[in-house]
Image (tube, rainbow, N blue to C red):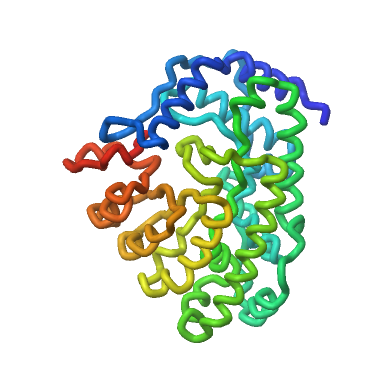
Length: 349
């Protein structure tokens, strides 16, 4: 692709500002933490060289980036440019098509947010149990349907352009797209009716989660052929480096009892963690009621959570940091106000 002058200036600026010694040191700080060689209580990274940009690209609305590969490319590099001027975040990019990538493969309608909100899109629920039955019996859909084609083509553009900038290619990882997790994908398609079906038609819920999990593997296997993950440590967002290859999202799990979590969420999450050699699970909202069950996954190496105020954090800590499962990207205020030993397993920004 022939890029516009402003995009080329942005790339040149980022390439020039990446300091290999600085980024190697920054990564090594993380590796020390991940290999349990960090000797403190709360881990925080520090970039030893921060640089201001020499070129600032004009702001890009996310709706415009949805329609233009070059604007998506530039918007992601703008994030890298900003992080190079900060103290403790990881530089990284992704094919940034929101939380509805997987549900869109099954035909869910893509919903772009109002332009002025400048917020990632999602998909609309089917609100149709018969449609869910057909999906559950239909096998793996075309993984280049919906947002799939754009997600992979954006990945190809990263490969093409990054190849021309050696420091960007080496130091700016392209982490896997937001595929959510099986239970989240199911709710994105089914809506709140899914929770009733867990009592009324549990076998249907399992059939749907089965085809979602199989599709997840097919999609991510293709992605990892483009961007092979490290066997040791991988980056996700600007806030997490982790053991294993994937980061799952379990936001919908806060609506489940521990019993329902163990039946409908845990088996499929655990299968994916095992298949991809482990990883991290993110959840928003309350998770203290199922965290003990979640932490049973042998390949769960960390959690990323928000809203500690909604949780009994001592319950969370007993099932994570006390079991050598790291908490990553956590609230520094909450961690510092807690007078307990995190065993060197707590990361805060």
